Length: 305
Image 1 (cartoon, rainbow, N blue to C red):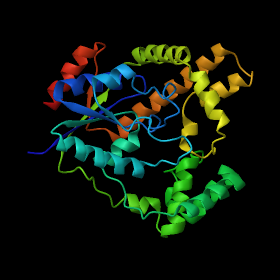
Image 2: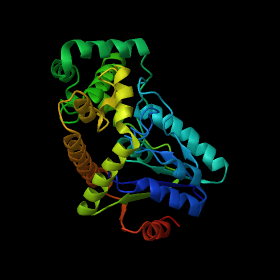
Image 3: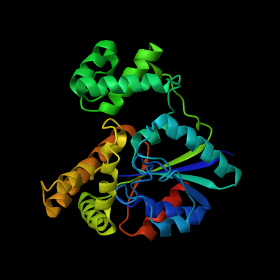
Image 4: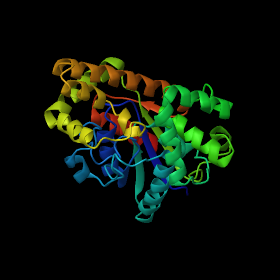
């Protein structure tokens, strides 16, 4: 009999974390983070990591365990996840992966390419080149070197552009050639895939409520501390919604009300992009929703039992 893995995805603020805890308690499960921003230790509030109460209710893995100073890729995440899933299986428990990062879920369901490890010093050389010439010229060089990235990587996505550049330069093979030859490491498992399809108006209310809670809990202080670290602008943590907006507030360029509204707008846009991703990459996922958490958990339990 195949061992079961539960995946719970959905747009930001849709209630994934609370649902995962509810399900974990019902099926003897442990929760693994599948959100690329919740891995950072310095951003508990702004990344909306599970609360201390949630962590007491169910075992959680891979939350807040690395520094914002570190480069962290999907490849590094999947290595850790494979280890955690193995440990959870050994305890005769069920791994429940939840989060909002589509690439992480793709790595579970479709696999990740076996790209040879590129030396740190070589990767640093590419980052220095990027910082020196800027994203526009860097992207133009990337297209000349590897035409396959066209229409696959946005001209504004510096992190993915840097990754594609270093892969092509040091493996002599396009990132997308590597990607085309991948298989899931979990193809022998029984993977149950749930996507929370929350109605738009309900989601907008949840987003606004969460933003207010973030400010009450101290997200401004988190950003102040982060800015003191003077982090490399190409690191993915800089994409975390709220950093740029709170930076503007701290510089006295915008009011606190405008800061909150800008965060709400950015979060709504992000949620929309997550829903768009799901329509393209999660077509065979089961879409569920209920405004009542207990009712939603019952629906999920029916699907995974």
